[in-house]
Amino acid sequence: MQNPAALPMPSEEMKIEASAHCDGPCGVYDPASARVAGEAVQSMTNKMLGLVCPDTDDGAAMAAYLNTMSRYAAIKEEEAQKCKKELLVLWTDFFKPQHLESIPDLHQTFWKAAKLCSACKVEVSSAHAQELMDAIEVIHYMFWAAKERDVPWIRAS
Image (tube, rainbow, N blue to C red; front, side, top):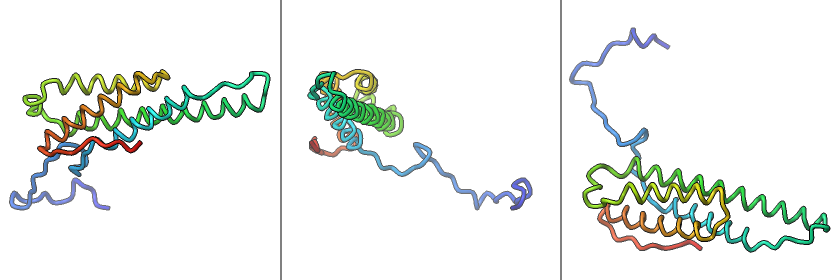
């Protein structure tokens, strides 16, 4: 491979200007991925709260219970982190300063939703899981309004 310093510089006619809103200008954004992750958080939370602890003297039953509970907790935390990542991408990459004119509570809405993702990771709270889903629904409508499209809120579960 040649030394980059030794390569000829393109002439003014050959220069191409490129700009992008993020590192990979794919232009594909959709709050659906956050919704699906949020639904998984809510589902795992409800499953954890519904799991009945067996008699602690029954070793096999306790092992099965702890295995199931730990799997539910791991999935809940993973999906809450995925949800937060998806929300942050929308917030920081899709939405622009001009959106604040039509959506003045945009920053507060996303900040609250991200905090709810964290709360859902460290707690087993059906109330916080529902609040997260409610926040994602608000973001869904904000997003599609910004794109001037009417897309209904539909849950997978």
